[in-house]
Image (cartoon, rainbow, N blue to C red):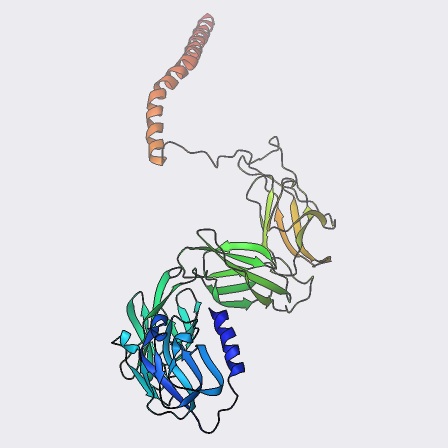
Length: 480
């Protein structure tokens, strides 16, 4: 259809003279309602003048059939000889000399169809043209061309057959829609005299909902860390956030703040954010570039903090400390024995059953020897000897540079000879006294009996011997 119209248009332009003679006139026969092909082929145009060209136009002002003469032809003219590519005709244009008594016959085959003859080209009351749209998740953006008619008033839009709104502009937005939903959009042009075009419709589907990522990212740079604050997505189905450091997954979280620690000072990092939803969908990676602050100290000057030595457990000493936040690769533990001791034997005189004795020797003067390396914050020395005093030094190393170190001294624990720390008695002091009295009453008689058995024979023997000796002395006295 469009190809045939284009060919017809080109032929018409070639055949119509570029200029109209001064005595030529244009007349328009305009029908109130478009007439079909069957009707206009029975129409006869009458008049008292001559014409060169006769052109038919459809409702969009596109001409198709034409009749052209190099020399004028006398009216009347029957349109049955015209060839048309149109289904309907809205008006004819006659170009020729001035005519009088111009009229049309044959229209009575459709009695309700009337016509008017005018010298002004008719303005069609058309609907908007070349409607285009852009779909979003929750809206549809419309653009178009409004009719070139003096009486045009506004465009009225419908959404699913209900009036949505009107506008005089060549663009319009339909908002507050559901994602991934099909809508029927209707539109018609309304004119100042109250006439309006037929409503045309299109079907449009909104886009799939867009996955939201974090927003309003704020990064607070420190020397060895970065504090992040952001707003998580509010979209239904959000599950968790993935945080990346230099392209590598660093952590997952569902909180709106996070701190990345253990970073190098004065170093630039790329931090990425990706929102993951319950159905497995995820957003593109959103990145920000952050640079940590520059420290006031140089590498090798960072020491461990809060170094302590705990000797509360037997046969070992536990060290603990806090590592520096930056300029830190590892901690090195050194040890030096500052004094040695030995325990006193139980065979020694004047010993106390509940005390261990230590004899201190002079300081050895040995240098600290390295015994362990770690990037942790704890160390247990299991090679200590009971009663020895030790000095520990803990240094830090970064990029091959070692700090001077932090010191702590302690003594290896000596276990008690008798350890009753874990012994518990089933009675208190009052119960002990009551029990002791009862026991004494019980065993007192046996003790006295035992003493009697031991001492009574001796007493009897002493009495007997004393009696014998007395009798002997009496006999000697009498003899004299």
